[in-house]
Amino acid sequence: MARSSMHFHWSNKISNEDEEDISSPSKPCLKTSIKHPQQPSPTKKKLQAVTLTRFRSVLTAISKNRTNLLNSLGSRVVGTLFGSKGGHVYFTLQKNPISQPAFLIELQTPISGLVKEMASGLVRIALECDKHDDKMRKMSNSKRLLEEPVWRTYCNGKKCGFALKRECGEKEWRVLKAVEPISTGAGVLPPEKTVDEEDESDEIMYMRAKFERVTGSRDSEAFYMMNPDCNGAPELSVYLLRI
Image (cartoon, rainbow, N blue to C red; front, top):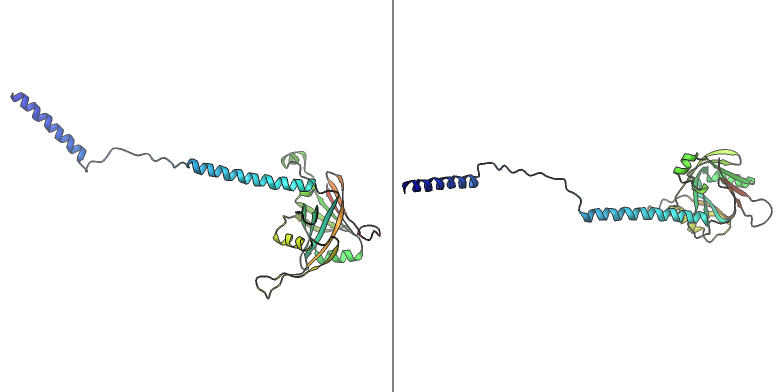
């Protein structure tokens, strides 16, 4: 009986020690937690994928729209030369007066210099760009001539800097909308009022006419201004060459 009692007392002691070990706050916990980097939620991934898809679709739509404009430009186009009195010449080609420009470049030639050339007689503007080699042509998907971004400019045989392809911004589109009713003619648009009413922008000089488009090859096109008086050669010719 005594042995049985001793055994019971020993077992109870061990139990009490175990309880103390478990409940004692002074002993450190041996458990460790491994932090994993947060993974984006499925919803966030889905939103990113949708955004990327939409962005690509917008770029594709812009590219297709531009290609359609070039393909449907036709043999007769509307050409407009314009620029502020103290600025450069802009030249744009449209399928019709209300369509988006298929071609818009900024020449380094001052508009005042071009007006003087026009007053002296015929004006021939030649725009030249470099051909791409076979490797570059495959990479650029063989750009159309009107899509080339940089041109060397010659006016009546004299070199006059470079011309750069531009997107039609708000300012350029405002000019085209202002001359939309004009089929053939030249003139000056009144200056625009700026935020400060005392300050005004320069007057915009313009010349607008129909041009006959002649495609020689993939690397050459010419645009001849159609003279409404039918009294001989056109006053203005624009040549695009890839050499």
